[in-house]
Amino acid sequence: MGDTHETPLASASLEEDDTLESAGEKHGFLPIETNWFDRLFISVVIWVALSLFWFRFVEPLGLSIWISNAIAVVLAIFIVRKG
Image (cartoon, rainbow, N blue to C red; front, side):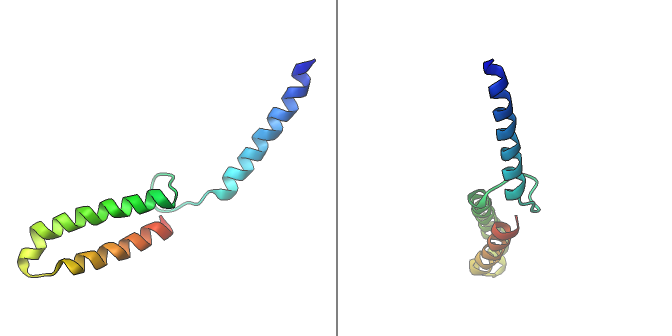
């Protein structure tokens, strides 16, 4: 007798969860599901890697690190908004 009352409620809650997930999904170019903080973290990691690369290979050629920072900021804005 308890099973007949629980089954409709369980299936109704599953249907509501499916509609909430599909309505909130946003598909970006990143191959993983992320929120804004994940995309911000990815941007910071890219900024650090780009800065290290810039210090090692590009700055000895005479280009300033500020150019690298500008590239990193533009990438971060793009990743956080579109990723």
